[in-house]
Image (tube, rainbow, N blue to C red):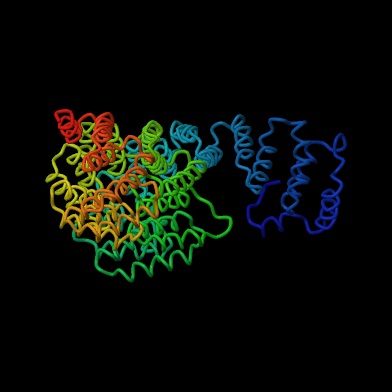
Amino acid sequence: MGLPSEPEAMEAAIDPTKRSTLQNLFARASADALPVEGQLSSTSLTHLAEAALLMGHDATAEHLLHHALLDRPGDATLHAIAERIAARRGDGAARLAHLEAQLSERPDDTDLLRRQAHLLASAGEADAERPVRRLEALGEVTAADRSLLSGIRARAGAPDEALAEIEAALREDPSQPDDWVRRGELLEATDVDQALTSAESCLNIDRQHGEGWALKARCLARLPGREQEALKAATHAVALNAGGWTTVMLKADLQESIGAFTAAEEGLDRALLAHAENAPLRAAIATRRLERGRLDDAQTLLDAVPVGVDHASLHLVEGRLALARAALIRDGTGAVDGGRLREAGDAIDQALKLDRENGLAWLAMGRVQRLLGDFDAASESLTRAGRLLDEHLPALCAEAALLALEHGDDIEAERLTDAADIRGEGALIAYVRGNIAARRGRLDDAIAKYDEALTLDPTHVRARLNRCSAYLGGDLPERALEDAERLLAQAPNLLLARLRRAESKMALTHWNEAVADLKVIIDAVPNHHHALTQLAACQVALDRPERAEAPLNEALRAAPNHAHAWHQRGLLYLRWERFEEAASDFEAAIRCRGDHLDARLHLAAIHHV
Protein backbone atom coordinates (compact mmCIF):
# COMPACT_ATOMS: atom_id res chain seq x y z
CA MET A 1 0.00 0.00 0.00
CA GLY A 2 1.43 3.42 -0.95
CA LEU A 3 1.20 6.44 1.34
CA PRO A 4 -0.73 9.39 -0.13
CA SER A 5 0.36 12.83 1.03
CA GLU A 6 -2.91 14.78 0.66
CA PRO A 7 -5.77 14.34 3.20
CA GLU A 8 -8.33 13.73 0.42
CA ALA A 9 -6.13 11.00 -1.06
CA MET A 10 -5.67 9.46 2.38
CA GLU A 11 -9.45 9.29 2.85
CA ALA A 12 -9.95 7.71 -0.58
CA ALA A 13 -7.20 5.15 0.01
CA ILE A 14 -9.29 3.31 2.62
CA ASP A 15 -12.04 1.02 1.29
CA PRO A 16 -15.30 2.62 2.53
CA THR A 17 -16.70 -0.82 3.49
CA LYS A 18 -13.74 -1.39 5.83
CA ARG A 19 -13.35 2.14 7.16
CA SER A 20 -15.93 1.82 9.96
CA THR A 21 -14.49 -1.48 11.18
CA LEU A 22 -10.95 -0.13 11.18
CA GLN A 23 -12.06 3.07 12.90
CA ASN A 24 -13.63 1.07 15.74
CA LEU A 25 -10.53 -1.15 15.95
CA PHE A 26 -8.14 1.78 16.14
CA ALA A 27 -10.35 3.68 18.59
CA ARG A 28 -10.24 0.65 20.94
CA ALA A 29 -6.51 0.32 20.35
CA SER A 30 -5.90 3.88 21.49
CA ALA A 31 -7.30 2.98 24.87
CA ASP A 32 -6.21 -0.64 25.31
CA ALA A 33 -3.45 -1.10 22.68
CA LEU A 34 -3.69 -3.94 20.18
CA PRO A 35 -2.54 -7.34 21.50
CA VAL A 36 -0.48 -8.03 18.38
CA GLU A 37 2.62 -9.80 19.64
CA GLY A 38 2.63 -13.32 18.13
CA GLN A 39 -0.85 -12.76 16.67
CA LEU A 40 -0.18 -11.16 13.26
CA SER A 41 2.45 -11.51 10.58
CA SER A 42 4.76 -8.60 9.86
CA THR A 43 2.95 -8.09 6.53
CA SER A 44 -0.42 -7.78 8.29
CA LEU A 45 1.11 -5.46 10.86
CA THR A 46 2.48 -3.29 8.06
CA HIS A 47 -0.90 -3.02 6.32
CA LEU A 48 -2.63 -2.18 9.58
CA ALA A 49 0.04 0.41 10.41
CA GLU A 50 -0.45 2.09 7.01
CA ALA A 51 -4.21 2.16 7.52
CA ALA A 52 -3.83 3.59 11.05
CA LEU A 53 -1.50 6.28 9.75
CA LEU A 54 -3.89 7.20 6.91
CA MET A 55 -6.80 7.47 9.37
CA GLY A 56 -4.85 9.68 11.79
CA HIS A 57 -4.09 7.12 14.51
CA ASP A 58 -0.35 7.81 14.62
CA ALA A 59 0.27 6.24 18.05
CA THR A 60 -1.41 2.99 16.98
CA ALA A 61 0.55 3.00 13.70
CA GLU A 62 3.79 3.45 15.63
CA HIS A 63 2.87 0.62 18.01
CA LEU A 64 2.16 -1.73 15.09
CA LEU A 65 5.36 -0.73 13.29
CA HIS A 66 7.42 -1.35 16.39
CA HIS A 67 6.31 -4.99 16.39
CA ALA A 68 6.74 -5.32 12.62
CA LEU A 69 10.31 -4.00 12.88
CA LEU A 70 11.12 -6.61 15.52
CA ASP A 71 10.45 -9.22 12.85
CA ARG A 72 12.00 -7.28 9.89
CA PRO A 73 14.50 -4.83 11.50
CA GLY A 74 16.10 -3.52 8.30
CA ASP A 75 13.00 -3.36 6.13
CA ALA A 76 13.11 -0.11 4.12
CA THR A 77 9.33 -0.08 3.60
CA LEU A 78 8.70 -0.19 7.34
CA HIS A 79 11.28 2.52 7.96
CA ALA A 80 9.60 4.66 5.28
CA ILE A 81 6.28 4.46 7.15
CA ALA A 82 8.05 5.14 10.45
CA GLU A 83 9.74 8.17 8.87
CA ARG A 84 6.34 9.48 7.82
CA ILE A 85 5.04 9.12 11.39
CA ALA A 86 8.14 10.91 12.75
CA ALA A 87 7.60 13.71 10.20
CA ARG A 88 3.99 14.15 11.34
CA ARG A 89 5.20 14.26 14.94
CA GLY A 90 7.98 16.76 14.09
CA ASP A 91 10.69 14.43 15.41
CA GLY A 92 13.72 15.28 13.27
CA ALA A 93 16.08 12.91 15.07
CA ALA A 94 13.74 9.92 14.52
CA ARG A 95 13.29 10.90 10.85
CA LEU A 96 17.05 10.92 10.36
CA ALA A 97 17.39 7.50 12.01
CA HIS A 98 14.74 6.00 9.71
CA LEU A 99 16.31 7.68 6.66
CA GLU A 100 19.68 6.17 7.54
CA ALA A 101 18.02 2.74 7.77
CA GLN A 102 16.44 3.18 4.32
CA LEU A 103 19.71 4.41 2.81
CA SER A 104 21.57 1.38 4.13
CA GLU A 105 19.34 -0.66 1.79
CA ARG A 106 19.02 1.92 -1.01
CA PRO A 107 22.20 4.07 -0.81
CA ASP A 108 21.71 5.65 -4.23
CA ASP A 109 18.08 6.70 -3.78
CA THR A 110 18.18 10.38 -4.74
CA ASP A 111 14.91 11.27 -2.98
CA LEU A 112 16.18 9.79 0.27
CA LEU A 113 19.51 11.59 -0.08
CA ARG A 114 17.77 14.91 -0.67
CA ARG A 115 15.47 14.49 2.32
CA GLN A 116 18.45 13.60 4.47
CA ALA A 117 20.40 16.65 3.25
CA HIS A 118 17.51 19.02 4.01
CA LEU A 119 16.94 17.54 7.46
CA LEU A 120 20.62 17.70 8.38
CA ALA A 121 20.90 21.27 7.07
CA SER A 122 17.80 22.45 8.97
CA ALA A 123 19.25 20.90 12.15
CA GLY A 124 22.55 22.72 11.56
CA GLU A 125 24.48 19.45 11.39
CA ALA A 126 28.02 19.62 10.02
CA ASP A 127 27.35 16.32 8.19
CA ALA A 128 24.71 17.94 5.95
CA GLU A 129 27.15 18.19 3.06
CA ARG A 130 27.66 14.42 2.80
CA PRO A 131 24.36 13.46 1.06
CA VAL A 132 24.72 16.35 -1.41
CA ARG A 133 28.24 15.22 -2.29
CA ARG A 134 26.80 11.72 -2.80
CA LEU A 135 24.26 13.16 -5.25
CA GLU A 136 27.11 14.95 -7.00
CA ALA A 137 29.04 11.67 -7.32
CA LEU A 138 25.95 10.01 -8.78
CA GLY A 139 25.65 12.79 -11.37
CA GLU A 140 22.20 13.63 -9.98
CA VAL A 141 22.95 17.00 -8.37
CA THR A 142 20.46 19.74 -9.32
CA ALA A 143 20.47 23.52 -9.04
CA ALA A 144 18.35 23.17 -5.87
CA ASP A 145 20.94 20.77 -4.42
CA ARG A 146 23.72 23.26 -5.14
CA SER A 147 21.68 26.01 -3.51
CA LEU A 148 21.33 23.87 -0.39
CA LEU A 149 25.06 23.08 -0.46
CA SER A 150 25.80 26.81 -0.72
CA GLY A 151 23.87 27.44 2.48
CA ILE A 152 25.70 24.59 4.21
CA ARG A 153 29.11 25.95 3.19
CA ALA A 154 28.14 29.48 4.28
CA ARG A 155 27.15 28.24 7.74
CA ALA A 156 30.41 26.29 7.92
CA GLY A 157 32.34 29.55 7.48
CA ALA A 158 33.45 28.95 3.88
CA PRO A 159 31.95 31.94 1.98
CA ASP A 160 34.07 31.47 -1.15
CA GLU A 161 32.93 27.87 -1.54
CA ALA A 162 29.35 28.91 -0.79
CA LEU A 163 29.54 31.57 -3.51
CA ALA A 164 30.95 29.09 -6.03
CA GLU A 165 28.07 26.67 -5.35
CA ILE A 166 25.33 29.29 -5.61
CA GLU A 167 26.77 30.65 -8.84
CA ALA A 168 26.87 27.11 -10.24
CA ALA A 169 23.21 26.72 -9.24
CA LEU A 170 22.31 29.99 -10.96
CA ARG A 171 24.12 28.99 -14.16
CA GLU A 172 21.99 25.85 -14.24
CA ASP A 173 18.74 27.56 -13.24
CA PRO A 174 18.74 31.37 -13.08
CA SER A 175 14.99 31.55 -12.39
CA GLN A 176 15.20 31.07 -8.60
CA PRO A 177 14.87 34.44 -6.76
CA ASP A 178 16.03 32.93 -3.44
CA ASP A 179 19.32 31.92 -5.03
CA TRP A 180 19.90 35.47 -6.30
CA VAL A 181 19.34 36.76 -2.77
CA ARG A 182 21.78 34.21 -1.37
CA ARG A 183 24.39 35.26 -3.91
CA GLY A 184 23.85 38.90 -2.95
CA GLU A 185 24.18 38.16 0.75
CA LEU A 186 27.47 36.36 0.14
CA LEU A 187 28.81 39.32 -1.87
CA GLU A 188 27.36 42.06 0.31
CA ALA A 189 30.39 42.55 2.54
CA THR A 190 33.01 42.57 -0.25
CA ASP A 191 31.31 43.74 -3.47
CA VAL A 192 28.24 45.87 -2.85
CA ASP A 193 27.73 46.59 -6.57
CA GLN A 194 27.53 42.89 -7.43
CA ALA A 195 25.28 42.30 -4.42
CA LEU A 196 22.98 45.04 -5.70
CA THR A 197 22.94 43.40 -9.14
CA SER A 198 21.84 40.15 -7.50
CA ALA A 199 19.05 41.95 -5.65
CA GLU A 200 17.85 43.46 -8.94
CA SER A 201 17.95 40.03 -10.63
CA CYS A 202 15.82 38.61 -7.82
CA LEU A 203 13.27 41.42 -8.11
CA ASN A 204 13.11 41.09 -11.89
CA ILE A 205 11.80 37.57 -11.29
CA ASP A 206 9.55 38.36 -8.31
CA ARG A 207 8.65 41.97 -7.47
CA GLN A 208 7.09 40.81 -4.19
CA HIS A 209 10.22 39.11 -2.90
CA GLY A 210 10.69 40.76 0.50
CA GLU A 211 14.24 39.54 1.12
CA GLY A 212 15.23 40.85 -2.30
CA TRP A 213 13.97 44.31 -1.32
CA ALA A 214 15.77 44.07 2.03
CA LEU A 215 19.04 43.18 0.29
CA LYS A 216 18.58 46.05 -2.16
CA ALA A 217 17.94 48.48 0.71
CA ARG A 218 21.11 47.42 2.54
CA CYS A 219 23.22 47.76 -0.59
CA LEU A 220 21.83 51.15 -1.60
CA ALA A 221 22.24 52.47 1.95
CA ARG A 222 26.00 51.93 1.61
CA LEU A 223 26.22 53.89 -1.65
CA PRO A 224 26.57 57.69 -1.35
CA GLY A 225 23.65 59.77 -2.56
CA ARG A 226 21.19 56.89 -2.89
CA GLU A 227 19.36 57.27 0.39
CA GLN A 228 15.97 57.93 -1.23
CA GLU A 229 16.20 54.73 -3.33
CA ALA A 230 17.35 52.79 -0.28
CA LEU A 231 14.38 54.11 1.71
CA LYS A 232 11.93 52.99 -0.99
CA ALA A 233 13.48 49.52 -1.00
CA ALA A 234 13.41 49.30 2.81
CA THR A 235 9.76 50.43 2.82
CA HIS A 236 8.88 47.59 0.40
CA ALA A 237 10.77 45.08 2.55
CA VAL A 238 9.10 46.15 5.80
CA ALA A 239 5.66 46.14 4.12
CA LEU A 240 6.36 42.54 3.06
CA ASN A 241 7.45 41.69 6.62
CA ALA A 242 10.93 40.79 5.36
CA GLY A 243 14.49 41.49 6.43
CA GLY A 244 13.84 41.09 10.14
CA TRP A 245 14.25 43.77 12.78
CA THR A 246 17.46 45.07 11.19
CA THR A 247 15.50 46.25 8.14
CA VAL A 248 12.97 48.01 10.37
CA MET A 249 15.87 49.88 12.01
CA LEU A 250 17.50 50.58 8.63
CA LYS A 251 14.28 52.14 7.37
CA ALA A 252 14.18 54.44 10.41
CA ASP A 253 17.83 55.43 9.92
CA LEU A 254 17.17 56.25 6.26
CA GLN A 255 14.12 58.32 7.16
CA GLU A 256 16.22 60.31 9.62
CA SER A 257 18.93 60.79 6.97
CA ILE A 258 16.44 62.74 4.82
CA GLY A 259 15.03 64.68 7.77
CA ALA A 260 11.88 62.63 8.33
CA PHE A 261 12.42 62.29 12.09
CA THR A 262 8.77 62.06 13.09
CA ALA A 263 8.04 59.43 10.43
CA ALA A 264 11.02 57.38 11.66
CA GLU A 265 9.76 57.37 15.26
CA GLU A 266 6.18 56.61 14.22
CA GLY A 267 7.37 53.74 12.03
CA LEU A 268 9.30 52.20 14.92
CA ASP A 269 6.27 52.52 17.21
CA ARG A 270 4.06 50.80 14.61
CA ALA A 271 6.59 48.01 14.13
CA LEU A 272 6.79 47.36 17.86
CA LEU A 273 3.02 47.42 18.19
CA ALA A 274 2.77 44.80 15.43
CA HIS A 275 5.62 42.69 16.82
CA ALA A 276 5.41 43.27 20.57
CA GLU A 277 7.08 39.93 21.34
CA ASN A 278 10.06 40.53 19.04
CA ALA A 279 12.74 40.97 21.72
CA PRO A 280 15.65 41.95 19.38
CA LEU A 281 13.47 44.65 17.77
CA ARG A 282 12.42 46.03 21.16
CA ALA A 283 16.05 45.97 22.33
CA ALA A 284 17.23 47.75 19.16
CA ILE A 285 14.64 50.53 19.53
CA ALA A 286 15.46 50.91 23.24
CA THR A 287 19.18 51.10 22.38
CA ARG A 288 18.47 53.75 19.76
CA ARG A 289 16.62 55.88 22.31
CA LEU A 290 19.29 55.30 24.93
CA GLU A 291 22.02 56.46 22.54
CA ARG A 292 20.02 59.63 21.85
CA GLY A 293 19.90 60.42 25.55
CA ARG A 294 16.24 59.41 25.96
CA LEU A 295 16.85 57.18 28.96
CA ASP A 296 13.29 57.29 30.30
CA ASP A 297 11.85 56.34 26.89
CA ALA A 298 14.26 53.42 26.66
CA GLN A 299 13.28 52.27 30.15
CA THR A 300 9.57 52.48 29.24
CA LEU A 301 10.15 50.05 26.37
CA LEU A 302 11.92 47.60 28.67
CA ASP A 303 9.23 47.89 31.32
CA ALA A 304 6.60 46.97 28.70
CA VAL A 305 8.18 43.63 27.69
CA PRO A 306 5.33 41.07 27.44
CA VAL A 307 5.22 38.33 30.08
CA GLY A 308 7.19 35.29 28.99
CA VAL A 309 9.47 37.18 26.59
CA ASP A 310 13.16 36.94 27.51
CA HIS A 311 16.25 37.60 25.45
CA ALA A 312 19.91 38.42 26.05
CA SER A 313 19.57 41.68 24.09
CA LEU A 314 16.95 42.99 26.54
CA HIS A 315 19.20 42.38 29.55
CA LEU A 316 22.12 43.97 27.71
CA VAL A 317 20.13 47.18 27.10
CA GLU A 318 19.07 47.15 30.77
CA GLY A 319 22.76 47.00 31.69
CA ARG A 320 23.67 49.80 29.30
CA LEU A 321 20.88 51.93 30.76
CA ALA A 322 22.30 51.44 34.25
CA LEU A 323 25.74 52.40 32.92
CA ALA A 324 24.32 55.55 31.34
CA ARG A 325 22.58 56.50 34.58
CA ALA A 326 25.78 55.90 36.52
CA ALA A 327 27.56 58.33 34.20
CA LEU A 328 24.95 60.99 35.03
CA ILE A 329 25.40 60.78 38.81
CA ARG A 330 29.17 60.40 39.12
CA ASP A 331 30.63 62.07 42.17
CA GLY A 332 34.29 61.25 41.63
CA THR A 333 34.48 58.84 44.59
CA GLY A 334 32.33 55.94 43.35
CA ALA A 335 30.09 56.22 46.41
CA VAL A 336 27.07 57.35 44.36
CA ASP A 337 27.49 55.63 41.02
CA GLY A 338 28.90 52.34 42.36
CA GLY A 339 25.41 50.95 43.00
CA ARG A 340 24.34 51.69 39.45
CA LEU A 341 27.48 50.03 38.12
CA ARG A 342 26.76 46.87 40.09
CA GLU A 343 23.18 46.98 38.83
CA ALA A 344 24.57 47.17 35.28
CA GLY A 345 26.84 44.22 35.96
CA ASP A 346 23.92 42.12 37.22
CA ALA A 347 21.86 42.85 34.09
CA ILE A 348 24.76 42.06 31.74
CA ASP A 349 25.46 38.87 33.68
CA GLN A 350 21.86 37.82 32.96
CA ALA A 351 22.46 38.48 29.26
CA LEU A 352 25.54 36.25 29.34
CA LYS A 353 23.66 33.47 31.11
CA LEU A 354 21.27 33.43 28.13
CA ASP A 355 23.99 33.82 25.49
CA ARG A 356 27.63 33.12 26.38
CA GLU A 357 28.65 33.97 22.80
CA ASN A 358 27.35 37.55 22.94
CA GLY A 359 30.42 39.64 22.21
CA LEU A 360 28.69 42.97 22.94
CA ALA A 361 27.67 41.69 26.38
CA TRP A 362 31.27 40.73 27.17
CA LEU A 363 32.36 44.19 25.99
CA ALA A 364 29.82 45.88 28.28
CA MET A 365 30.87 43.63 31.18
CA GLY A 366 34.49 44.66 30.61
CA ARG A 367 33.49 48.30 30.87
CA VAL A 368 31.58 47.75 34.12
CA GLN A 369 34.52 45.87 35.61
CA ARG A 370 36.96 48.61 34.57
CA LEU A 371 34.79 51.31 36.13
CA LEU A 372 34.57 49.26 39.34
CA GLY A 373 38.36 48.96 39.38
CA ASP A 374 38.52 45.21 38.70
CA PHE A 375 41.06 45.52 35.90
CA ASP A 376 42.04 41.82 35.70
CA ALA A 377 38.43 40.75 35.23
CA ALA A 378 37.92 43.58 32.71
CA SER A 379 40.91 42.36 30.69
CA GLU A 380 39.50 38.82 30.62
CA SER A 381 36.07 40.03 29.51
CA LEU A 382 37.56 42.17 26.72
CA THR A 383 39.62 39.19 25.54
CA ARG A 384 36.41 37.16 25.26
CA ALA A 385 34.72 40.04 23.43
CA GLY A 386 37.66 40.24 21.03
CA ARG A 387 37.22 36.58 20.06
CA LEU A 388 33.56 37.19 19.19
CA LEU A 389 33.64 40.67 17.59
CA ASP A 390 35.56 42.38 14.81
CA GLU A 391 38.92 43.21 16.40
CA HIS A 392 38.79 46.70 14.84
CA LEU A 393 35.32 47.53 16.19
CA PRO A 394 35.74 51.10 17.54
CA ALA A 395 33.85 50.38 20.79
CA LEU A 396 36.10 47.38 21.51
CA CYS A 397 39.30 49.26 20.67
CA ALA A 398 38.20 52.24 22.76
CA GLU A 399 37.39 50.15 25.82
CA ALA A 400 40.67 48.25 25.54
CA ALA A 401 42.51 51.59 25.20
CA LEU A 402 40.81 52.98 28.32
CA LEU A 403 41.86 49.86 30.22
CA ALA A 404 45.43 50.32 28.96
CA LEU A 405 45.36 53.90 30.30
CA GLU A 406 44.28 52.55 33.70
CA HIS A 407 47.48 50.51 33.63
CA GLY A 408 49.46 53.62 32.63
CA ASP A 409 50.24 52.24 29.17
CA ASP A 410 49.49 55.17 26.85
CA ILE A 411 51.54 53.58 24.03
CA GLU A 412 49.24 50.54 23.93
CA ALA A 413 46.22 52.83 24.18
CA GLU A 414 47.43 54.78 21.15
CA ARG A 415 48.05 51.57 19.19
CA LEU A 416 44.50 50.44 19.87
CA THR A 417 42.96 53.72 18.78
CA ASP A 418 45.07 53.63 15.61
CA ALA A 419 43.68 50.13 14.90
CA ALA A 420 40.14 51.52 15.09
CA ASP A 421 40.93 54.20 12.49
CA ILE A 422 40.12 51.81 9.63
CA ARG A 423 36.45 52.46 10.51
CA GLY A 424 36.90 56.23 10.76
CA GLU A 425 37.29 58.25 13.95
CA GLY A 426 33.97 58.54 15.77
CA ALA A 427 33.15 60.35 19.00
CA LEU A 428 34.32 57.47 21.18
CA ILE A 429 37.76 57.17 19.58
CA ALA A 430 38.23 60.96 19.61
CA TYR A 431 37.39 60.92 23.33
CA VAL A 432 39.98 58.22 24.03
CA ARG A 433 42.61 60.12 22.02
CA GLY A 434 41.82 63.15 24.19
CA ASN A 435 42.47 61.06 27.30
CA ILE A 436 45.79 59.88 25.89
CA ALA A 437 46.87 63.46 25.16
CA ALA A 438 45.77 64.58 28.65
CA ARG A 439 47.75 61.72 30.22
CA ARG A 440 50.83 63.01 28.36
CA GLY A 441 50.25 66.55 29.57
CA ARG A 442 49.36 67.87 26.10
CA LEU A 443 46.29 69.81 27.20
CA ASP A 444 45.82 71.72 23.92
CA ASP A 445 45.78 68.44 21.97
CA ALA A 446 43.44 66.91 24.54
CA ILE A 447 41.02 69.82 24.24
CA ALA A 448 41.09 69.56 20.42
CA LYS A 449 40.19 65.86 20.59
CA TYR A 450 37.40 66.47 23.10
CA ASP A 451 36.16 69.20 20.73
CA GLU A 452 35.99 66.58 17.96
CA ALA A 453 34.13 64.12 20.17
CA LEU A 454 31.58 66.75 21.22
CA THR A 455 31.06 67.93 17.65
CA LEU A 456 30.15 64.36 16.70
CA ASP A 457 28.14 63.71 19.89
CA PRO A 458 27.17 66.83 21.88
CA THR A 459 25.69 64.64 24.66
CA HIS A 460 28.97 62.81 25.38
CA VAL A 461 29.15 63.40 29.14
CA ARG A 462 32.65 62.03 29.74
CA ALA A 463 34.19 64.05 26.90
CA ARG A 464 32.66 67.28 28.24
CA LEU A 465 33.73 66.48 31.81
CA ASN A 466 37.28 65.82 30.69
CA ARG A 467 37.38 68.93 28.51
CA CYS A 468 36.22 70.91 31.53
CA SER A 469 39.13 69.47 33.56
CA ALA A 470 41.56 70.24 30.72
CA TYR A 471 40.32 73.84 30.60
CA LEU A 472 40.95 74.15 34.35
CA GLY A 473 44.42 72.64 33.92
CA GLY A 474 45.10 75.06 31.06
CA ASP A 475 44.01 78.09 33.13
CA LEU A 476 40.82 78.63 31.10
CA PRO A 477 38.25 78.80 33.93
CA GLU A 478 35.61 80.69 31.91
CA ARG A 479 35.43 77.89 29.35
CA ALA A 480 35.50 75.27 32.10
CA LEU A 481 32.53 77.02 33.72
CA GLU A 482 30.59 76.94 30.43
CA ASP A 483 31.12 73.17 30.14
CA ALA A 484 30.15 72.59 33.77
CA GLU A 485 26.96 74.64 33.36
CA ARG A 486 26.01 72.69 30.24
CA LEU A 487 26.63 69.38 31.99
CA LEU A 488 24.41 70.36 34.91
CA ALA A 489 21.67 71.40 32.50
CA GLN A 490 21.96 67.95 30.89
CA ALA A 491 22.35 66.02 34.16
CA PRO A 492 21.38 68.02 37.29
CA ASN A 493 22.49 65.20 39.63
CA LEU A 494 25.97 64.89 38.16
CA LEU A 495 27.99 65.78 41.25
CA LEU A 496 31.28 65.66 39.38
CA ALA A 497 30.02 68.45 37.08
CA ARG A 498 28.99 70.44 40.16
CA LEU A 499 32.51 69.93 41.57
CA ARG A 500 34.02 71.21 38.31
CA ARG A 501 31.71 74.23 38.45
CA ALA A 502 32.85 74.92 42.01
CA GLU A 503 36.51 74.65 40.96
CA SER A 504 35.89 76.96 37.98
CA LYS A 505 34.35 79.53 40.32
CA MET A 506 37.28 79.15 42.71
CA ALA A 507 39.64 79.90 39.82
CA LEU A 508 37.52 82.98 39.06
CA THR A 509 37.58 83.93 42.80
CA HIS A 510 33.80 83.55 43.11
CA TRP A 511 34.31 81.99 46.51
CA ASN A 512 30.80 82.13 47.96
CA GLU A 513 29.26 80.57 44.84
CA ALA A 514 31.89 77.83 44.97
CA VAL A 515 31.05 77.17 48.65
CA ALA A 516 27.37 76.79 47.78
CA ASP A 517 28.16 74.10 45.18
CA LEU A 518 30.60 72.29 47.45
CA LYS A 519 28.03 72.13 50.26
CA VAL A 520 25.52 70.51 47.88
CA ILE A 521 28.12 67.84 47.08
CA ILE A 522 28.99 67.25 50.74
CA ASP A 523 25.31 67.01 51.69
CA ALA A 524 24.96 64.23 49.10
CA VAL A 525 28.29 62.52 49.90
CA PRO A 526 29.42 63.53 53.42
CA ASN A 527 32.84 61.87 53.07
CA HIS A 528 33.68 63.41 49.68
CA HIS A 529 37.29 64.14 50.58
CA HIS A 530 38.07 66.31 47.55
CA ALA A 531 34.98 68.51 48.02
CA LEU A 532 35.79 68.85 51.75
CA THR A 533 39.35 69.90 50.92
CA GLN A 534 38.16 72.48 48.37
CA LEU A 535 35.59 73.80 50.84
CA ALA A 536 38.40 74.39 53.33
CA ALA A 537 40.40 76.26 50.67
CA CYS A 538 37.38 78.50 50.00
CA GLN A 539 36.95 79.26 53.71
CA VAL A 540 40.60 80.29 53.97
CA ALA A 541 40.23 82.48 50.85
CA LEU A 542 37.16 84.11 52.43
CA ASP A 543 39.32 84.85 55.51
CA ARG A 544 37.38 82.34 57.61
CA PRO A 545 40.23 79.94 58.48
CA GLU A 546 38.47 78.83 61.67
CA ARG A 547 35.90 77.11 59.42
CA ALA A 548 38.56 75.25 57.42
CA GLU A 549 40.01 72.82 59.95
CA ALA A 550 36.88 70.69 60.49
CA PRO A 551 36.32 69.85 56.80
CA LEU A 552 40.04 69.06 56.41
CA ASN A 553 39.90 66.69 59.38
CA GLU A 554 36.85 65.00 57.80
CA ALA A 555 38.65 64.73 54.45
CA LEU A 556 41.65 63.05 56.04
CA ARG A 557 39.48 60.61 57.98
CA ALA A 558 37.79 59.65 54.71
CA ALA A 559 41.02 59.51 52.67
CA PRO A 560 44.23 59.34 54.73
CA ASN A 561 46.33 59.30 51.53
CA HIS A 562 44.85 62.48 50.07
CA ALA A 563 48.03 64.59 49.71
CA HIS A 564 46.14 67.79 48.86
CA ALA A 565 44.22 67.70 52.18
CA TRP A 566 47.45 67.21 54.19
CA HIS A 567 49.01 70.14 52.34
CA GLN A 568 45.97 72.38 52.87
CA ARG A 569 45.89 71.62 56.60
CA GLY A 570 49.62 72.23 56.80
CA LEU A 571 49.06 75.69 55.25
CA LEU A 572 46.30 76.35 57.76
CA TYR A 573 48.57 75.43 60.69
CA LEU A 574 51.37 77.50 59.17
CA ARG A 575 48.99 80.47 59.06
CA TRP A 576 48.31 79.92 62.77
CA GLU A 577 52.07 79.53 63.45
CA ARG A 578 51.60 75.96 64.65
CA PHE A 579 54.87 75.02 62.99
CA GLU A 580 55.35 71.49 64.32
CA GLU A 581 51.87 70.42 63.26
CA ALA A 582 52.35 72.15 59.91
CA ALA A 583 55.66 70.32 59.34
CA SER A 584 54.03 67.01 60.26
CA ASP A 585 51.26 67.59 57.71
CA PHE A 586 53.69 68.62 54.96
CA GLU A 587 55.68 65.43 55.64
CA ALA A 588 52.45 63.40 55.36
CA ALA A 589 51.67 65.08 52.03
CA ILE A 590 55.12 64.12 50.73
CA ARG A 591 54.66 60.52 51.92
CA CYS A 592 51.40 60.37 49.98
CA ARG A 593 52.86 61.98 46.88
CA GLY A 594 56.58 62.14 46.56
CA ASP A 595 56.50 64.77 43.81
CA HIS A 596 54.46 67.30 45.85
CA LEU A 597 56.79 70.26 45.29
CA ASP A 598 54.80 72.84 47.31
CA ALA A 599 54.80 70.61 50.41
CA ARG A 600 58.57 70.15 50.10
CA LEU A 601 59.13 73.91 49.76
CA HIS A 602 56.98 74.72 52.79
CA LEU A 603 58.67 72.01 54.86
CA ALA A 604 62.11 73.33 53.88
CA ALA A 605 61.04 76.85 54.87
CA ILE A 606 59.94 75.65 58.32
CA HIS A 607 63.21 73.81 58.91
CA HIS A 608 65.17 76.81 57.70
CA VAL A 609 63.48 79.00 60.25
